[in-house]
Amino acid sequence: MEFQFNAEPYRIKVVEPLKITTPEERQQILKKAQYNIFKIPAEDVFVDLLTDSGTSAMSQYQWAGMMAGDESYAGCRNWFHLEKVIQDITGFPYILPTHQGRPAENILMMIHLRPGNAALSNMFFDTTEAHVRNKGGLPIDLIIDEGLQTDSDHPFKGNVDVDKLERYICEKGKENVGLIHVTVTCNNNGGQPVSMANLRAIREVADRYGLPFYLDAARFAENAYFIQQREAGYATKSLKEIAREMFSLADGCTMSAKKDGLVNIGGFLALKDEEKYRQAQQALILLEGFITYGGMAGRDLEALAIGLTEVLDQAYMENRIRQVHLLGESLLKAGVPAIQPIGGHCVMLDMKRFSPHIPQEHFPAEALAAALYIDSGTRGCGLGQLAFGSEDPQKGVIHYSPLEVVRLAIPRRVYTDNHIQLVTESVIRLYEERTKLRGMRVIWAPPALRHFTAHLEPLQG
Ligand SMILES: *Cc1c(COP(=O)(O)O)cnc(C)c1O
Image (cartoon, rainbow, N blue to C red; front, side):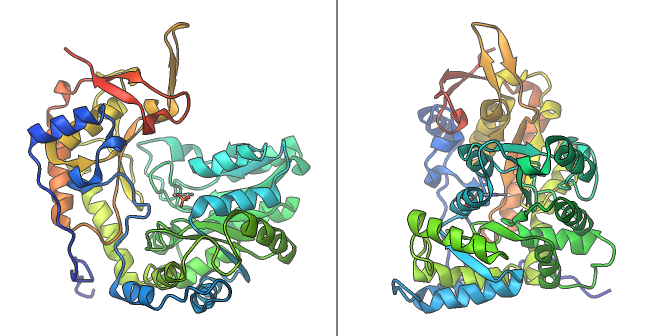
């Protein structure tokens, strides 16, 4: 056994100072933000675990690449670099640059969905689901049952239930299905991976019924790492080889490069089919920009080309997952209920077990997010009743969200283990005093996507 370096495989050259605030100040800041974590100015947050999207730190090579940006309208050199890198990693011949993930999803659904068509997935990310609906399509999640059980330790909780997939296609008719679109890793249940065997089985079903099969590849490299660590036959393969095999089973992919692209903005759509590519090109020009820059500046294309190679570095990825798991395993060891096994990019605190004394209609996830901010300046994200549920006080009807979690998403290469330690101690402190935690009440909310802008208030007593 080789000596393991359990430390960041990089050192710090530029620092971004963080503001220190007192609990009293944070109490005031939170009140001013109507107890909505999204409305807190980022400068008043000490450890920002709201999302891992677009929050990565870039390397010296990426910053140097930014200076080599070619801002020509057509045919800039950075585009040819990026195109070559993506072709090399994915094996897909046709690449279209977009400014983030969702325009790629929009275009994919434009070229594959007719009104009334179903789109089948393990679990659709919310923007993808919205684009399916926007085309008159029907988004269907077909994840394995274990994927939704918060205490199941299945190694690939992002897998599609292939029996359900085939049954759905048989029952509804393959002519009513537009495409299969599988999210790797599966974001909604905590960054849970999809196995190579599962991707292979999905490919077989797709071939049997003549359906296109795409990947939502936002976290393709983290998924490749879990395959390397957990699936028989992959331990000695490189992340790049594994990623290439994953992509070889699909007809193309959408990607939000704000995750495993290690950049702050960017995305792409990749395809195998030339005819679909022609259609997608027209949509790209209409929605994003010319085909050699999409929605990005030349310098952004260059930073992404470099980020996509860095994310497949074994030392980078081992440290990345090590840090996410350091947070998760430390919390589990202290008895804090978190979704197991810990996924690739975040830790999810299971509020139904954390504070069973707070009913879901009193928003326990938002209550803990608020307490965590006051305790240590940490910003997590409540994902539960406020985001996915609804209440109708007139009729006395409540639609409960199946999930009630606080998500702590870890930005890539941004925080040190000391920050992780601070968050760990803060969560454990709040867990030990969990009976003191009180629910929240909605003062005002818009009709849709209320968790982003709702005004809340702590319940007394
Ligand atoms: C972030 C994300 C998207 C959407 O990408 P944006 O860059 O935010 O538009 C799609 N799918 C998954 C799995 C994501 O995590």
